Image 1: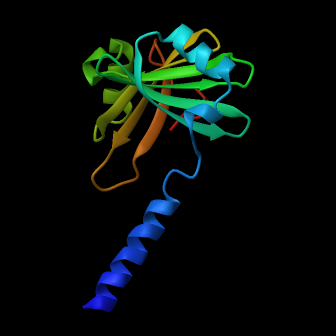
Image 2: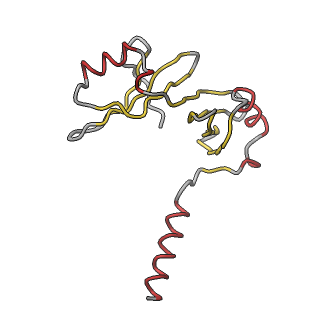
Length: 149
């Protein structure tokens, strides 16, 4: 019994130590980065920070909506995204998905704002084949843009 409990504690500790390797304590985030976030999203709550290369990613809520923002070390918001309901996707996108991915289910739609452009990310789940992660412009055209997880 004692060895089983020890093995469980060891496994739990290992799993917890592997989780969130990129997490950054708020005091380790430069003031310019924190200020940029609060200036752009003054109602942000529940902020979690991660370091992504030289940039900082903040995951947070505004009201009850999940947001993420990527901010460089000089305090420029590079991009941000937020969750929306599938019904909030532009009609052109829903039509394109219906025509080209009729056997897929829309999951996790998001608005992605980057370089002044508003794009839409969607995960398309399929029960028997590969799921898709796609980015669309508001007119329903698929965009050659990396999906931001």
